[in-house]
Length: 355
Ligand SMILES: O=C(O)CCC(=O)C(=O)O
Ligand SMILES: [Fe+2]
Image (tube, rainbow, N blue to C red; front, side, top):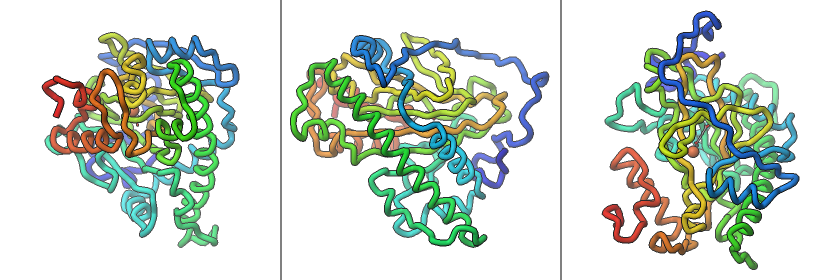
């Protein structure tokens, strides 16, 4: 259970950090989206037809037999929770340390690389109620490590060192998974990948992990409780590990559905870059996180994103050619000025959104 001191001040009046509701006290949820079963892909026995269908019809699937050791997953979850449970002030300081490649954020992750910019002009009850930290995998080795381990003064640094070691191992597994999936998906698209071409589409060095905490919310109607607003990911592939609290929703057709957690599996979703690479044959799925008022615990999740080389120009029959860096800059500019991402529609030729 978390302490209110650990939340950013802007969250405090809105969180419910008391005891979780007893079953009898759980109020009926007014707006309940239906549950949906997403396709399941077995990484040990990759079936290209099932994969193609999942990418074309869904843009999201559950991954099983991924080969990541379960103790690693649970240790990572434990240490991430304990870091996020530190008092707000300490958390910010810890992550702001000189030369630390990690950064703490709350509010809109896409905007808040450096810290604490909340979405302006957004009603408090509607803001993204999520905090966490960005971990660029490439620079993990640069996280300052501490040699002492049980000295009180160094306790936080020591936690951070353990986090780094676990993240490093987790990062290697998740990169392996993303690469295998990308190769298989490229085959389903008949993409010729020779020499360095794969690393242009899928630049392993861009791998970024975000560790999230979504507080339980109080005082808002269920329909308003957004942990993370509706979006598509900008990545090629995203791989999500979530805990058992639930809250992830996807749009299929014109409807929202809840994707319920299944232990020891990952959720893989295709991002905008995969949609563009596939000439829109595959989908970058719209999704969001709703933190329900009656949630028994906070939601914790860890999400990995991988992108193309920054200068790599994505050519597609659907969009004007763009370098990934242009896309990223446009997303940042839109989030800053409009409070939301426009994404691929900005790059459709002749669209009113095309710049
Ligand atoms: O935390 C989650 O479950 C989803 C996170 C997400 O969609 C994202 O980081 O893009
Ligand atoms: Fe996402």
